[in-house]
Image 1: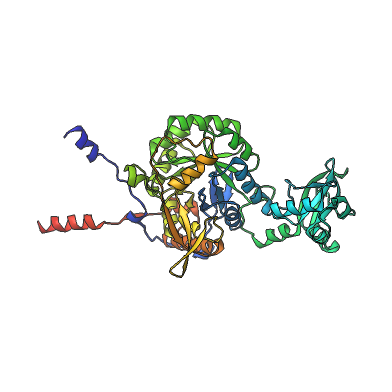
Image 2: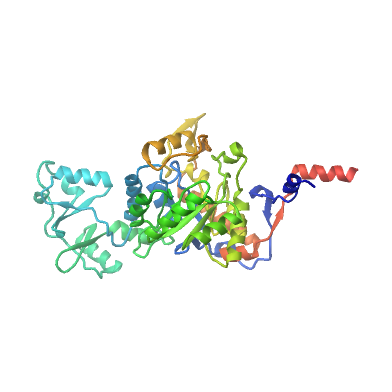
Length: 476
């Protein structure tokens, strides 16, 4: 046998979702009692195994807020300026929190018109007024609505402000706000130095979204995508995000690995690396970079990715998950694996978990939701939303215009654009997926995510070609 024939004979079988099925097993638990809690990265627990993809038609602040409220986590895309990405991250962190630490304030010499513009820009309804970082008043939407825009804030603000101390509890905060009929409660030190702000809406939302993914301060969790070569952006975002996701199509590259290694030493948040597709890629990457907190795997399988079609190179998501899981087992490491690409239904997520994933990244599924930033159109009387790959020509052109690190070594686009059916709000989609994943786990006899990894058995699905070959062999 020649060398090249042997290469074919020894080739691995690269499989994906359509090639296998999850086998039923002995079950002792009802689907409604199945626990979907898992991890996005080493230090970030999530309550459902769903992550929104860092694509500019999928995840901006509205999507990240929605998916975090329902127990997952969003990865904000990087197809924008660093400042715009930071503002999206901040918006998620401000969306709800017991005590808002990053408080937007105004000084007494500004005009009421300035205050109104700040409130409009940040979509808030009130501003603490400070002088030398000490609270001297508060101005609300009601104050600016009925005041001359040209007068000073000092002349329109409320001076006698109800405040709370640093050790206030949620119950005490609600009682204070109800008693004084206010919606905003500044938190101050004994010397009136402003250290935070509590809003009635945020405290109420904590009760409404009991399964939300929150950090230690009660804020919604969020991750952000970065280039491994953009250290300035990474350091800027690291002050606010829960995790940074290294966002490249092919991570198993010397320059990418070395750049990520340098970046990881400069920031103090979880670093998720990817995309990876082979066991060797995982072994090489994890061994060279300290404290890798998560792996994003799958190359060329996304609905708007044409890498494999154009280059005939890639690693189907389910195969990539198995490769990563085997590599981590060999190393004796527990690092969450994120299955990325081509996931269309809850069963795909369950299969990914059975092969070793901790969670799955959704692009196509969420692009059709109300909360995605993509434009909507009507085609034949039905609503659709635009979804494009980050390797598409239009996405590349936008990135080149905004990101000085976006120099492409490959001249050919590896993504495309499609119109996806409108699916309604994220809440209904996540509910459908969570129910479907629980049902699949129930069939497999698994009570939680780790249980499915251990117990999940699969069977290969014989393709039409294989069936035809078997049939012909039998006839002969």
